[in-house]
Length: 374
Image (cartoon, rainbow, N blue to C red; front, side, top):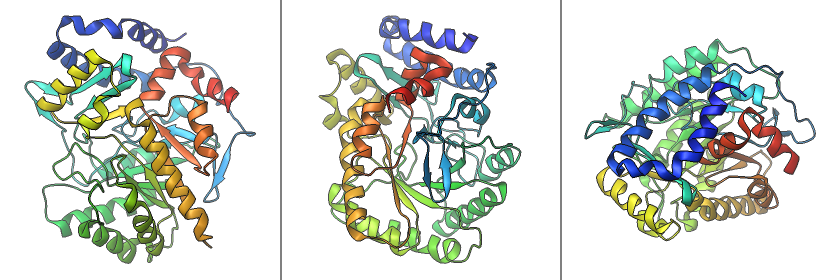
């Protein structure tokens, strides 16, 4: 057992009791320790060859994924840890969401990148604000990776907020080109982050005109013109209105996108609150009123299942000539979650809170344990 595996197992045992030091101190503690953990995780050295799961691998867009599940974009902010998760046997590796301009992320009341887990509710909340060093920095790191078989590389990008829309689009196109040249296998555009100034979610009764414009502009300026046909997907929130699934899929298909990811964290605090342990619901109230943030884990499980199943059923009915795949993110904790969605023809999955829960139990062997149940 490596040092980081021991640390994770120990932390999982004390996690239910650590808030006894006071909630504000607990938030500060986890916000600081989370960054340190990821750094140590990336540097962890364990001695076994990359695990291959040929019988459980999936091929989509002519890309072979070792397993149908891999990390969500919030995990590796600075494009680190590829070799770690590839050796574990992950289906793929996705870099943390980058923007054209570097972002320091959110800071308030002396706390940088606020984060709080809810162990009894199998959930967490964060208000990190997309800290990253920019598209070009992440692309440069990715260009130096020597890929491991069956562990393709994905890049997650988001628009810059607080600047002119045209400039934000120019930076997005620049990022798409940079990641393409860096050798990524697929690209995910994050339209769902609740923790930036202009986070988007399709929770109204019609498609946002600005979303339509961004989709069509990306098609005109990149997808229709690039010779490197890397699949590009759009990531939307678990707060997306189910009535908008069909029109947004039509919009994406008509503009040459290759798939949709449903979803991300949720900012519907009152709606999710009933799914929390009573004491942790009060902690949620404190965090959300003080910082805002996005809820992950078990409280978004049902919506991520329902939205992705709805999307998959609609795509199946269209009998498309081109490949368009559905990815589910949110509340994935075990093989049963994956198997339930695969019956609905959802093909790929991403996890974050569930990943770390499983890592605390199985360490670097977590994908092997998951594979046994798929």
